[in-house]
Image (cartoon, rainbow, N blue to C red; front, side):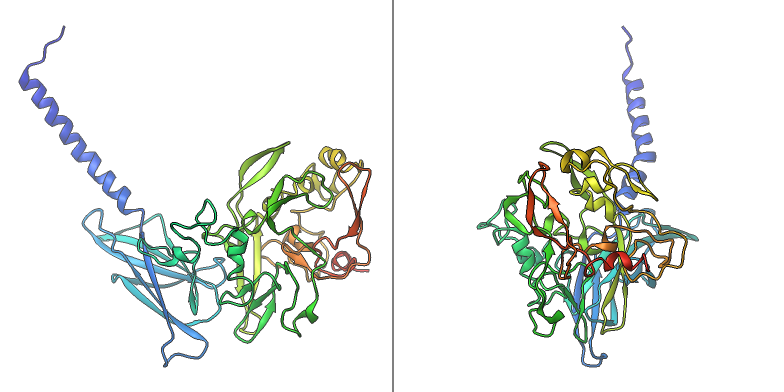
Length: 424
């Protein structure tokens, strides 16, 4: 048995302490500090001396302590295109900053990043704090503080009607309290338009309900097809026989900010076997190009849309989706009894010809290098088009047919959605 003297043990103890003091404090402090700015409060006002239809946005944040005894400053940058591009605004050592004359009804994202300067060396925090605002209103889906009152907009502490303590029976009903066209949100998903400074503009997503509450909006047309919108009753998708799922706003969107345009979910549940759903991470990259005040914005989807859609529509991305179309994949043949069926390709660029389509492509080049995706031909919410050529859907057992026809969420009447690219 080895016996150590008290003197040896004492020296060993102090040696360990000195080693920890050399390595540990610096790493722990930097780990805490370099996580960046935690909370940012937002105040939106409309001073009388500002131009009309603009607001003043003031940001206030907590100080970040230095990691190495240096000077802390803060970079602020701004995006008005949904996060596609950011423009540097300022570097400041103060804890508040005001952006004047911000256009109303514009999605604005600020990024705040702390940095420490020691002598001639500057270290940036690896994390920027996003702040989403929508003047003249604060974005209720983001900018949560430890003492925020925003939570009570959607939640109630003691008398919640759902397990998530929502103050209404379903998540979709909660969404519609703001997004039905009668309140301050500029996105009206029921009627399918976006508010602008001068009026309204048609939404890229289409309409869920009766399109045109105002008598002269889209001639008051009703939807001819729409995504199923019922969280209380399990229903089967068109062509299917298994009514095992419900669908609502939160099937595709998150109630809290997700860091991407339209607050699309970062994780979806994909059917991998009968009655089996597997979580799959998706990364939808998108933004919106700001137009003049009368026409609002133009959404730009860069990548990932088809991954989100395949959470339910897995058959349309099955097999080999090449330039010749996807082949007769086994899932389609077994579920719909249509052996030998081919599908139009997605996630590829059009042929190298002079394309003049008005349909949305996925990408930022805005030319033939952009890709055909689900949203190129289909609305995500609902369609009001007239479709004399709508096809009847074959039921899941391959024997019976649906008696109703669907316009399949298409963006144009009849087969115009094909002819917009395949011009005669």
